[in-house]
Image 1 (cartoon, rainbow, N blue to C red):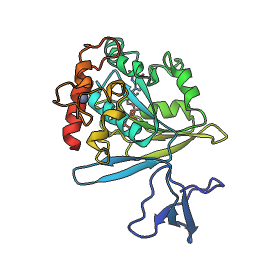
Image 2: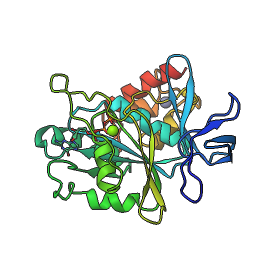
Image 3: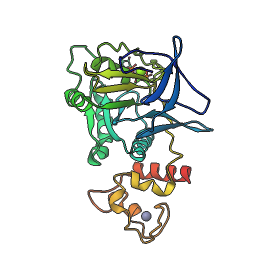
Image 4: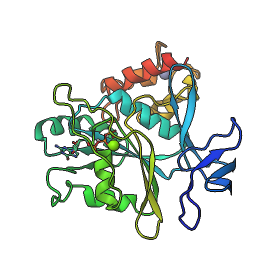
Length: 285
Ligand SMILES: Nc1nc2c(ncn2[C@@H]2O[C@H](COP(=O)(O)OP(=O)(O)OP(=O)(O)O)[C@@H](O)[C@H]2O)c(=O)[nH]1
Ligand SMILES: [Mg+2]
Ligand SMILES: [Zn+2]
């Protein structure tokens, strides 16, 4: 917990039911050298994480979420879609960054894979954060830096994509630990183990929240029937199906299914997006 004067203090929640997450504003009381959280202020938004048994919130009061992906390790579109849906459901703006532009070939493929997301209106930034400290950071580094000013941004993404490397570039005092990818597997072993808040800029107007790479967003709170409305490329077709309560999974006269594979021209829905929708629909039903 950080007091208005900047002092940091370890605080314990009062009672089992009270749970504070990163980004929370709290009412607290000092004890001898630690503190007690008396109350968590109402949240203007929050994101959830889930495991097999339950769903828990893990961050609150965010202005935006930056989803960081990289040329390597190759990203899962399913992860990206889940993250974007979680943001849409929470009413939080989502940005996408693709890092490791120095790995030219896998980068080109991954950038191409993100084209539909740019068309959908998600701001997408090409980055090269590491090769040399003197590097400009990739074509869109300056634009990204500008977008992050004055906002509280949660940085999310799979392990090993460069989230902590980004934090270190933007917050010189951060000294967040970064880790090399294990060569054999090409997947990162998780280097960042807990979520951490870093102030951005001397005026503390903005902040970056570094988080461990994790895969499973909590989406259990999203109703299957509301899923399509959270996918911007599906929206133009909603309300155009033959049945008003169409689930877009099997019905005749479904405008969404007709839009898959480019049947309706430019504003079509990519087959992989549709497949992920169908899987998620089944999962949430
Ligand atoms: N080739 C290349 N490697 C990079 C680039 N940016 C970061 N890396 C490397 O990628 C590895 C992972 O970086 P981290 O910043 O620790 O990744 P992370 O996303 O914080 O990973 P977790 O903390 O495990 O979630 C490190 O070895 C970085 O040096 C880049 O632009 N190009
Ligand atoms: Mg990290
Ligand atoms: Zn339909």
